Image (cartoon, rainbow, N blue to C red):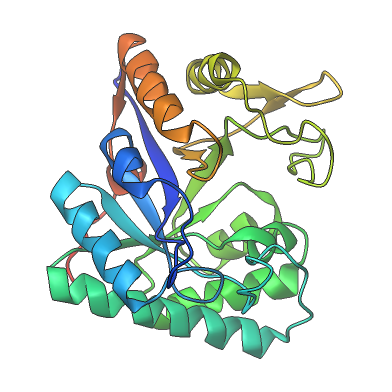
Length: 264
């Protein structure tokens, strides 16, 4: 029987100035990949530097977490940007993070869009193509993190590798999209249910949607939301439960396979 690998990723570095978001210091020991905010929805140069340095200390893979330019709305509002705006905004944010990766000698592993930029790209092929183009402009070898839809199809059509993502703490619609955060129960806060759900996802390759149907889902990485109350404790429990089930936690580049990343 082949070894089962999975990555645990978390959105990191989303604090800025005097504003604090998440508990990055306590999350890092549980994860294997970090999606680092690049200043458009959260993060600032000091926070980006500290986050990349912490990732290096913990042996955690680093990826860019670009967003709509929406600091006030935390990147969770729909913005009507053109494809060229989306492409250049993504390229700009990856470039910003890459400077800190070079400073600390850390490979840039992946790109995972944040919030509504990610959600809208699931169904909007023009937006998806623009995001992919921005990533490819920087480095065609970077992994693109996606939970499916047009965004994953756009990445694969462009010849880029996709790290398929699942969400243990979010409810799914029957079409594979995530239930809107505006709806009650969209975010699962019961730690035991999050852990059980994640282990089942990895071992069975499927998840139950809110209407009761089962969705067959490819997966390389599980997202943990560090801003959810008690997230650090859930991270510890989840990693332990997966390892007890015989699953090895590894950075997504190892899970997906391919070249070794190099600092840039």
